Amino acid sequence: MAAPSLPCLLLLSFLLASPHLSAASRGSFLKLPLLHRPSPAPQLLRRGRSSGSPVTSGAPFGVGQYFVALHLGTPPQRLLLVADTGSDLVWARCSACRGAGCSRRAPGSAFLARRSSSFRPHHCYSASCRLVPRPSSPPRCNRTRLHSACRYEYTYSDGSLSSGFFSRETVTLNTTSAKTKAAAVRLKGLAFGCGFQVSGPSVTGSSFSGAQGVMGLGRGPISLVSQLGRRFGSSKFSYCLMDYALSPPPTSYLIIGDGPGEENATTSSSLAFTPLLANPLSPTFYYVGIKSVSVEDERLPIDPSVWSLDDLGNGGTILDSGTTLTFLADPGYRPILAAMRRRVGLPAAEGAPPGFDLCVNVTGAGRPRMPRLSFEMEGGAVFAPPARNYFIDVADGVSCLAVRPVGTAEGAGFSVIGNVMQQGFLWEFDGDRSRLGFSRRGCAAS
Ligand SMILES: *[C@@H]1O[C@H](CO)[C@@H](O)[C@H](O)[C@H]1NC(C)=O
Ligand SMILES: *[C@@H]1O[C@H](CO)[C@@H](O)[C@H](O)[C@H]1NC(C)=O
Ligand SMILES: *[C@@H]1O[C@H](CO)[C@@H](O)[C@H](O)[C@H]1NC(C)=O
Ligand SMILES: *[C@@H]1O[C@H](CO)[C@@H](O)[C@H](O)[C@H]1NC(C)=O
Image 1 (cartoon, rainbow, N blue to C red):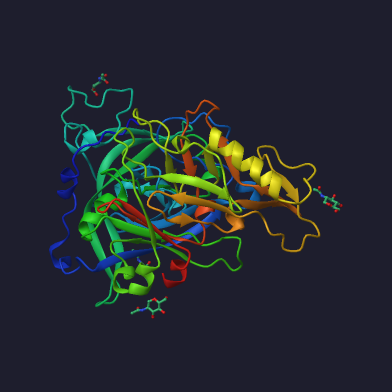
Image 2 (cartoon, protein in one colour):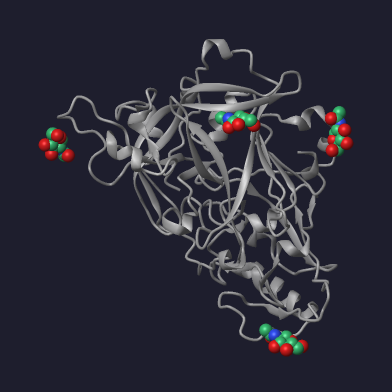
């Protein structure tokens, strides 16, 4: 991980609320609708070390990303961002255009920095500028120029990148609280990347499904949750990724702050918890511990070290909303695949798409019962997803195991629990208490 980790205190100074808004504080939270769109590529939208795994997109089969709208600037401009727990930076595609040409641009196709009176790039010598990775060239600060904006270059694991000016901007948000009605608040000084150069399959063209950027929800200090969490008195956030195969698709929400759960003991008590583990080498990621994996009631003989971080910070298992399919370390994946093959009890499908190791013919099987998969987490909680979270329909009558191997038989590579596997559960990330809560029953309540 190249993302520098500096004290979060630096960010406190960014987030000075307008004086007349000081009423919204502890007890209020943000509730942002999550929109889903199928996308043809960006299933590996995560920051950091390349996993070297073959990339299999779930998008042709109707799986994809979740998006959140963010209103940035003065007056506010609406931007659609990919919600990503696997990265930290909040960035939007920026346009420097001014004058008549701007009006021809489709509204919302990019953030028009010149149309905002509150846009301010960070200075390249500022402490804030050290929070973002610098571009390899040109040098971040040109000493011959008095005013030099903070340049950043943020790369994702597939080599996709966003590069531009690390800036400050005012964000407009609807807050909710138990006592007051929803209220629009304007927060000054949200640190975000104004991306002038954006490239790579995960963040461009049709594969980005019309999004204008990424909302980094990672654990590092520049993520949206780290920045806003301080404003709302808690670095907690939660989301529920509704099953988008349902019609009409139900609304999912991203909740930042304590949320309604705190006031509702029913919801809170139904959460099972597992510790969030820290990796100093990858401060962005939400690591969890897997103790064992079972298929049906057979606990598979997998060495637990396959799932865990080693002393050098390699390996481990993360939860990532920006990755669609689930990627498991090869030595753990093989026994799971073998057990699924043994127990699925359905004929193999002919002409299955490449990239899937197990595809079965479900024609005439009615509603086939797929083998149950469950993960025993650190702390004893059991994550037992429904079969549709790991078997996806890729064609008429063809269902494939939506889990892919990563790394080699010798190890290397870390495991990623992607967004399809997370569907239908409420996930609560609590950075302060270093724990992750999840519940099969929490979704309806939000
Ligand atoms: C610094 O800025 C000056 C003036 O804009 C330019 O001529 C020079 O090439 C720049 N230096 C570097 C190293 O980019
Ligand atoms: C706030 O909520 C209203 C009503 O739901 C909506 O029209 C508006 O776009 C929202 N504003 C922001 C900044 O989310
Ligand atoms: C599935 O099985 C049916 C008959 O049971 C067969 O007609 C069909 O071609 C098979 N489809 C695939 C993709 O294997
Ligand atoms: C808590 O959530 C449950 C389940 O959604 C709901 O039935 C109940 O009314 C809620 N209680 C309060 C106090 O909001």
